Length: 199
Image (cartoon, rainbow, N blue to C red; front, side):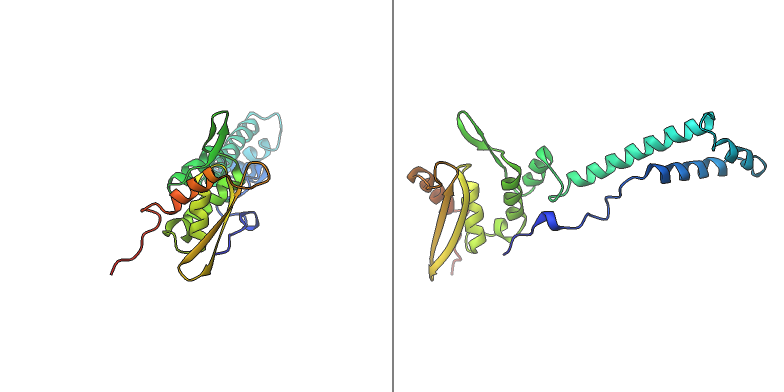
């Protein structure tokens, strides 16, 4: 299954850029409408004066509304794979039982760089991560998930019932060590990864 280029997705309709001047105009219109009809013309004229307290109040209210709308936008972005970042992505990944890797002085642990993390979550949310080993994408997903030392993985089937998974390491020239290959093999051959149909 081809990967979706998240950077090419259009901006979601839920995200609308707040326009202060438009919000201010709406606020002033609401304020004018809240007065009795005979006072509206005077209130409208007062709202045109920068020094008028009513205008200051309208601007303050409008600025606060703009900040709240921006916060809503940020909350919406945080819940999207294409726009989320940091711990927001960790929580999206958690829905798919996927974590990212990070490196410390003691080796690799879960959590890591954004691009790889996006690939892992995308794999988990698609058929690849939900499937047991079978489709090539599933083998690649589980291989990449096996260790933070796996930069990338490719699976091919040179003949029926035979799968070759090539591993690119994050270390050195990319050649995977035997220890890393054993780690990947253990994950790919785990009972909950490779379930065969029974008669």
